[in-house]
Length: 87
Image (cartoon, rainbow, N blue to C red; front, side, top):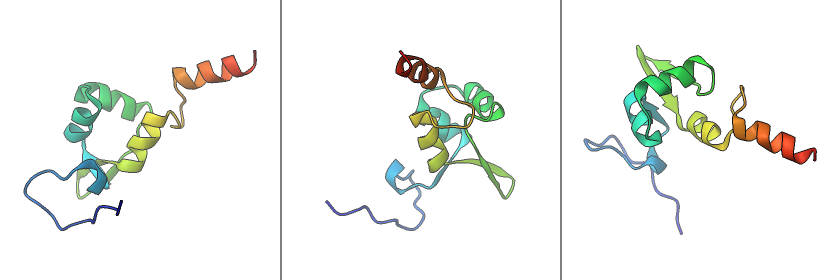
């Protein structure tokens, strides 16, 4: 199956496979959480952001790392894996 092409700006939101970064509200919708929760995770360093022209964006790579549990502060699932691995 060929990779999807990156196309110029559209008026409608692009599918996730074509986006490199998302706004705070878009990221919250993708994760199914509130913007307040998302901002809390950002402040804790669990989700990294980029500021471009006064706007804050969540890079797709940061979102993928967060969902995979490989962000810098660790998650409960990471701790469980470490604990269960030593038994």
